[in-house]
Amino acid sequence: MTAFILFDDGRVEPASGLLFRHPVDWIACRNADEVAGALARADAARRDGLHVAGWLAYELGYALEPALTALLPDTDGMPLLRLGLWPPPRRLVGDEIDAFLAGEGGGHYTLGEMSPSWDFAAYRAAFASVRDYIAAGDVYQVNLTFPLSFAFNGDSVSFYRDLRDRARAGHAALFTAPEETV
Image 1 (tube, rainbow, N blue to C red):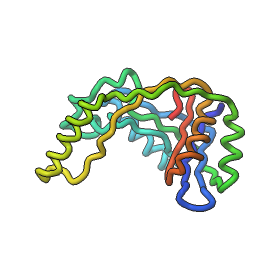
Image 2: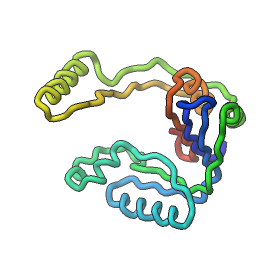
Image 3: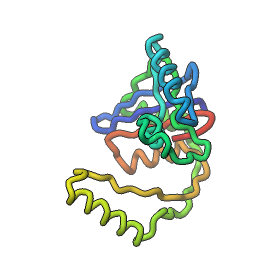
Image 4: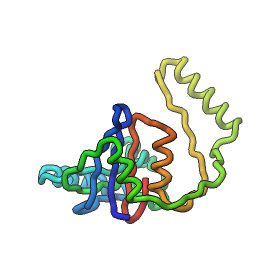
């Protein structure tokens, strides 16, 4: 499988997408000290006519806010960002998206049983805390989420294709690179 990013827009009929393929280079950083340089390099590539697309870890926010940098959690070696430097993307419409995904995927996959990282007592306590913050006027909205763990084996493109068909999300994306799939 070659590296690519597909940005999927399912809000319109037929669906459309932007497909980035054949990256010229990659930018990644694993610690807060590397972030400014990585972003400067991405900006320079953009000024040189390349497109910059990839993913940013949630934890990158700690590195972007000086007051939070010392609180940056351990990411187990995962990058804080991975950006590809790409030639212009190709627009795919309707069945072209399905054909592309079928050509890149086509394998089988299995999902293990999902296991939430919180039990009900932990969720109840977090929910009560959120409710208190809202009632106090400290926040107006909180997206209370928690990870679900499961084993995955097989073809990630086929998994994305099935998930895309079932979820019918307005926006979705699939990022494949030699080091990871997101």
